[in-house]
Amino acid sequence: MIMSLVTIGVMAYNDKIIIQQTTEGRGTAGGIEDTWTTYKSVWADIEDVSSYVSHESEMPVHEDSKSFKIHKHDAPSVTTKMRISYDSQYFFIRSIQKEGRLRTVLVAEAYDDE
Image (cartoon, rainbow, N blue to C red; front, top):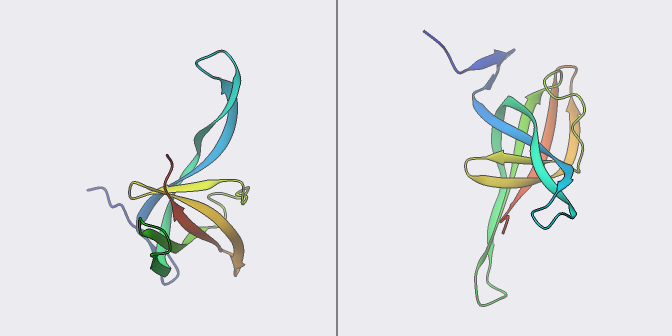
């Protein structure tokens, strides 16, 4: 039986996220363009930080921020130039915080990648 739950201390890392980075490559027209590629797939403990809907424009805009807690050794070189792919959404990494010796907290905000 395979378990898809990782527990460290009292924290359960039970959601799989993909951390992505930009990589320079050749575009279809032969030019150089940046594309998103997988840096690392890791287990995380995810919490909602905030969520709101803005009606300033004709179309409502949904803002969704989450805290992704990961084991520090799983992704030691994460930067704010990377993004997180989770639950069919992309999240810009807005801040990276250390939480003790074992955890890194990535606070990220959802956006549409169109």
